[in-house]
Image (cartoon, rainbow, N blue to C red):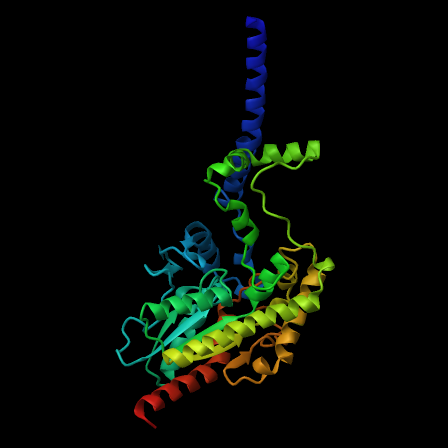
Length: 396
């Protein structure tokens, strides 16, 4: 009996040693190799070396800081919200918002402009002074307008989440004169990821995690813990046995080749149009003017740098059908009279189509020069809304 127990102890010890080496030894060796090669335990973010940055020295430090410090917490109704950060390149204040110049020092009678959008509006890839709202605020001031611009851009948010955020701000008594919305990419990307309109980023993960602490999901919780502690070992076991591991695994992404892309495009734009309708109704009731912008996307850029060609194939096994889906959504938006002919809705989707120089730093985000071009494209419509607001206040 003692021999059996001793043999079993040796087997268990050997298995444990193999697991520890597989899970932690390999990664420790890789971290050591990266530290010797790069002087850090991880590779520099390849986005920092994007053609569109033109070799800017700050980019590597920026992405080191961004990936280390920028996080989100759960937020009721909108799923997540950014945590405060005080970095060298990225500042997120106690409200979970990036700052814009002149907001805090603006006079009480300044025109209040709230900017809504996803990470492109938030300014991922750009320093604080070079986000779209920051540049828009600066340009408006240069034109002599007295404004206070607030950047409500949140990582991954789409128009539905922004509509809910707007509603909650109004319920809390926030004063809004103009609401600027910059959307399109997240509507398209979420449709690609979920196979339906009005989905959320990583929605499958949220479904898998739902109620994981409930006693009914105790087995799933144990499986989740095992997957966190020994992901490489369990992945190898799945490969060797051909069996799926039970537990809170998210559903696989849909196969775009099996989806009616034209129908999905119609559903995406219908959802977007209904959100605009709701926002306009709120604007009439609460007395603010909405201005909507549909943003550009890398898949329509005709001349792409080597980096941009790689970005356009990121995060998908089917770049061709992704391009077809995005094109179908953009075409559907252009066909709808209530969007294409609406005086408050502006289509910026073709802004960079003919740019020969690189402007995208990844699949979705722009360089600071790209942000400046977007802000400049927004400027006439937003300035006109500011002038109309000032004239209405004067009774003209």
